[in-house]
Length: 365
Image 1 (tube, one colour):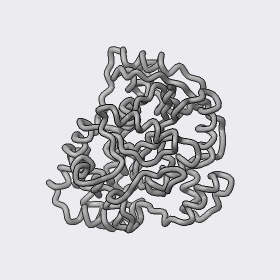
Image 2: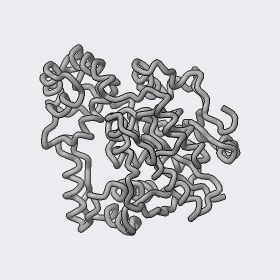
Image 3: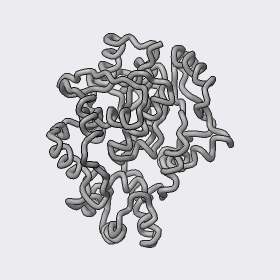
Image 4: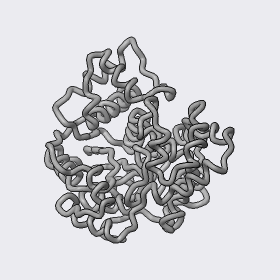
């Protein structure tokens, strides 16, 4: 059995994603195609425009056999940890081949091997701009791909596979230049502009039916959290570096919206994505112990599947992997951070995200 996997956010699912999935099937003919997908929070420190259930449904309807949730403990992280979590879950799910898109042909195995066996060791320094540090580190090794986001993320996937000695091979799909950009689509949605031709009709229907959430919806909650918390309490937040909590306390007073606030906090040391992720941690009052708990206790949370995926799930049930298809008392503790995060999302949407929710089953619900 050929078990292929991909890693995505589908925020939202657009025609480029459909083309990518179709290309995997046409080129590699997998028996099962598994997607590890971010939940309700995404890597750049934002809220997914559609919730994880709607996005999982779209993925299954449009070609994926099985959708596994990437917990926010991994999803809202720099590329290295995002990749580490996603690849780990694919390995737990029995994936033998990872496929990802790339802007140009690249020998990822050779580059990853070069990095993993270099004398210099890159360590994330949260006191500095991590993107700049990473670029300088790669350039010291004569590697220049940091301006190509898909290549950079793909390289992180391969590095994690090599470092953890996962039995996963790698294949790539060359991405042709196109207008299929999730960022541009979200910008058009925010500006109330048409996205016709950019997304499948099923995605269009979901976007019309649902109230799309943004940071602006949650800024009052963030402002309350920062205003009501002491400096000591803010210092205990995951990835809060020394001194930044004072900046948050100072700038929140005169900020009228999220964009203004983050721009006032931003400096040369912190990328916008880094600050947005930190704001997610602040909003959710995330502690390092909560993140570490997820890292030490991995699980597979099923969000959706078709008949092929269902048949494959039956084989996973015979293994010792922690497989979650519904949330009850037993799963409550393991999913504590995810439930907390989803309940914050629920403050605006009013939609339950965990209890009573069942995976989407194509042809059934």
